Amino acid sequence: MLAMLTNMPREVLIAQIKDGLVLMVLGMGTVFIFLIILIFATKLMSRIINGISKDHQSSPAPSAAPVQAAASVQVQQKAAPAPKGDDAAVAAAIAAAYDRSRN
Image 1 (cartoon, one colour):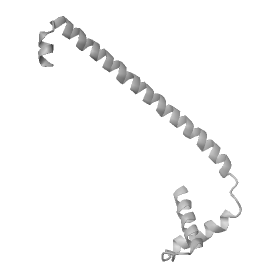
Image 2: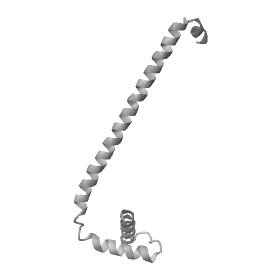
Image 3: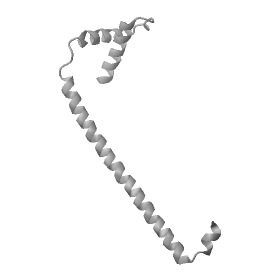
Image 4: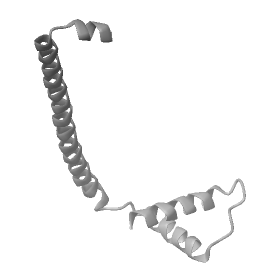
C-alpha cells in the first residue's frame, strides 16, 4: 500500500487527500446537523407529552387518595419489609415511592 502511494504523482496524491478531507467534513457536518435536529425534535415531543400529561393529572382519581395516604404513613413509620403474599403492603410501598419521586 505504501509503495503505491510513493509511486503516485504528487499532484494526484494531494488532490486525493483534499477530496478525502472534503468528504470527511461533509459527512461530519451531515451527522452534526442531524443530531441538532434530533435534539430539537426530542425537546418538542417532550413538551407535547408534558402538556398532555398535565391535562390528565388535573383531576386525580378519588380512589387514589386513600392509597397515597396509607403509603405516606407507611413510609414515615419506616415499616419492616412486608412478608411474601402481602400484596396490599407492597402496593402501598410502590405508591409511596412513586408519590415521593413525583414531588
